[in-house]
Length: 356
Image 1: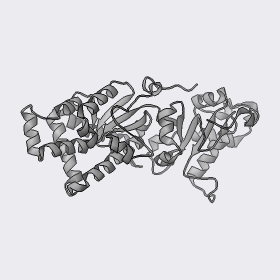
Image 2: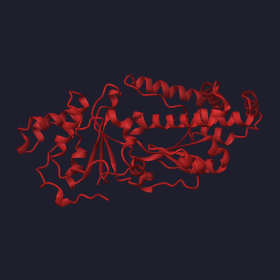
Image 3: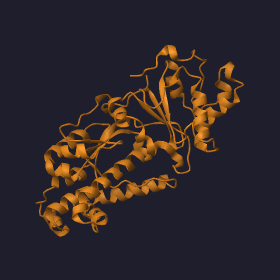
Image 4: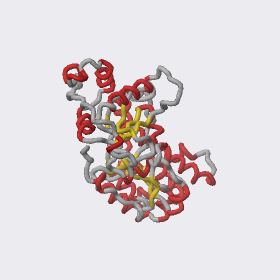
């Protein structure tokens, strides 16, 4: 629980009046009309009206996550400047920065620090159990696509679920049925990683030709998974690495590549899975498969969390596996669950929570 109490917060300051399109010189209250620094900060950060309303309603506890720390040597970095501007704005609201370890209503994250957000104390627990905690991204950075340069909510609700090869082999129907239940939720999605499906197929059939022949003869052991992908129940594909050069065109090209694979039906899906497996594991000893596949799953999940479109929607990232995996492969950025232990947090599953 938050230790700070209302009595510790400074007297309520005069609130800022911000319009939808943020024109501070016209909409600030008289006491702020000559505060040019404040006006400039609001304009540069594109401080949104909904956040202004949320912060003005009652005192909020918050923290700021950025690569810049106040104790470090001052610099002219954009991140340092933008973080200072954010703090200057926040001091005009009836709230308090309670630090990184206490319960908060909001976590402000600089756009360049999203990739390290999983290091925030109790990050996974905050995401899973505290669905009322909002994550708000701000700022600009040369290593991040310019499409992400604005103040916006991220990790809103629901989640994305995938599975490990061991988890599937131990309880295939349990994993499949759990995935089907998850896929029916509006704000949840199931994603099958191609190389993981390829590994399952290769372990069972031994070679690609035998697997493809079984599929052609309607005798494929994993036809229920391939059919679920073909029917659109589960998404399928490898996540791209999004860097500063990521554009709308590149995003559309990536989606088009996925669409081509899916448009070919079950055989195209299986062929793609086997190609992805061969590309990743062809030169790796069988004894290292387990270690490498877990590294690959972790990489795929992290890429999902950092993808601009996905991070704006999905909150939780879950890998369905075995009981042993849940104890062995702990993560500070996503969850390992067995099918029976997976549970929705219905506050974040049924709808996008609205600020209140």
